[in-house]
Image (cartoon, rainbow, N blue to C red; front, side):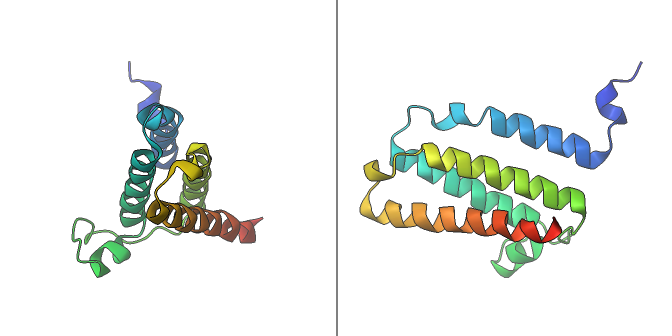
Length: 125
């Protein structure tokens, strides 16, 4: 008998994977120094952007996604919104006052980018 996961549409299966990753994400930087936690978050955000926006990756000289195009499906917009909200919640846990001066700026830029993604989604509603 097939597992019910195999019967799920690809976008839903992908959402479940992303959601399970994100809900356990707090364990990755729990107890880490703030600068290290911020580095993990910014690294993950950049990797996510390259996967979600393959044309950006190509422009940046990263050719891992040259065979893909950005998806404009509503389900992908929903996944992007969920990812950005969760990452923003994780970022809010980072103690900004414990960050180095340079990383406080990185924190602000990441927060602004996440808020831009989140507020840009409002057009749909």
